[in-house]
Each structure stands twice: as C-alpha cells, then as structure tokens.
Image (cartoon, rainbow, N blue to C red):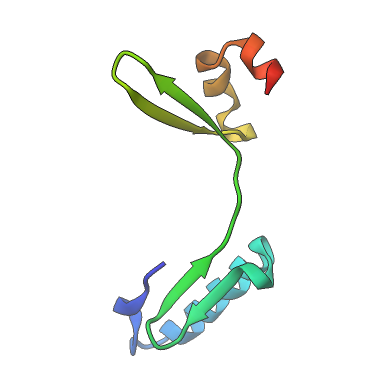
Length: 85
C-alpha cells in the first residue's frame, strides 16, 4: 500500500501509525511491515478462493471462499463441486 502522497502532511504520521497498529492486530505483527523511507506498507496474507475456468472464453474467474461471498458461490459453483472442495 503506497502512502507516499501523505508524506510530510500534517497529522499523517499519527494516522498512519494508527492504521498500521490496526493492520498488525488483524494480520499479525510479523505480516505487516512499514517502509518509512518509501511510505509503503506491505501486508502478507492468505485467503482461500475458488478458481473457475470459463472454457468458452478461456479465462479464469476468482471468487473468495468466505461468508460474504457465500450466496454468489452457491449460485455459481454447483453443490456437488462445493462438497468436494
């Protein structure tokens, strides 16, 4: 996450420190790094996705495998496939 446009702005350091603290709480201290010179945040995270090949157009679609996407997944991914994975 590039925040270089905030560098030297009034109050930016405080706002960024609050945001980084929250990111560390959510993703773990070891997964969030802030480069003070570049004003850039790197976050390591792992999510599960369904990868669906659209054979007619030879492209892949990716849907997150989470509660927020459950209703969409139920419409797009057949139940027999969902049970297997």
